[in-house]
Length: 216
Image (tube, rainbow, N blue to C red; front, side, top):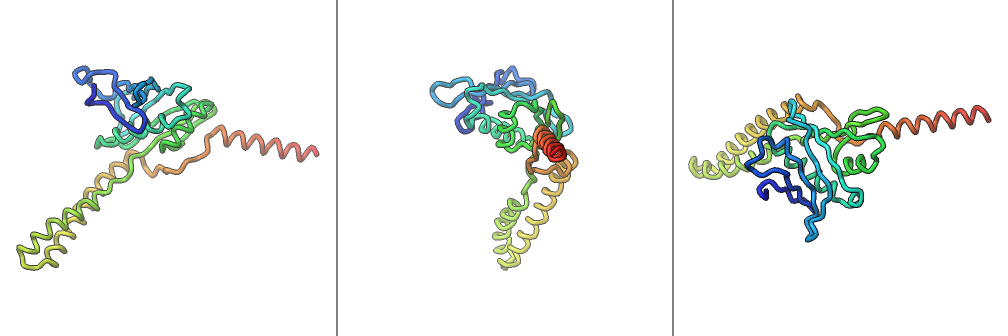
């Protein structure tokens, strides 16, 4: 189903259903293959049901022999870009076993950030960037302002009107989109944090060092 395939870097994501079979894009399993002639199977990724209030859960599996390559990052970044093209989606979540360090590393290199966790599992997510309609509407305002300036016989006045109108429209569009984004994601940071197991290990090491120092 070429019309749904996604090409990114050295991989291609191929859906498991034809266009006629797809009832919802969220029940499609994407097969990840190399883009080279071999077209070798790399892994797969899928969504865990429909989005809920602007958030969708996802998971993926990569064949062990391909985990050291950039295939995982290419696949994740491409699907993230595809998801965020949809207007009302603002966050993608993935839950991972704390012992799966390769998967955690792949997530962080792809822009996902640690959110919460315990000794068994951790949650990572990536948040949709803030919109930047302002720049686009300023350009449109300038384009509209040029003929307006000719019409009213004042280029300065025409450009000023167009520029102000563009700034106003850009501010309105950005305000609406980012207000909805904040409602869904809040002020979630995009700075990576240490995983829970690393914090616990450091704490245990510190306690052991303190205990040893006391015994000495």
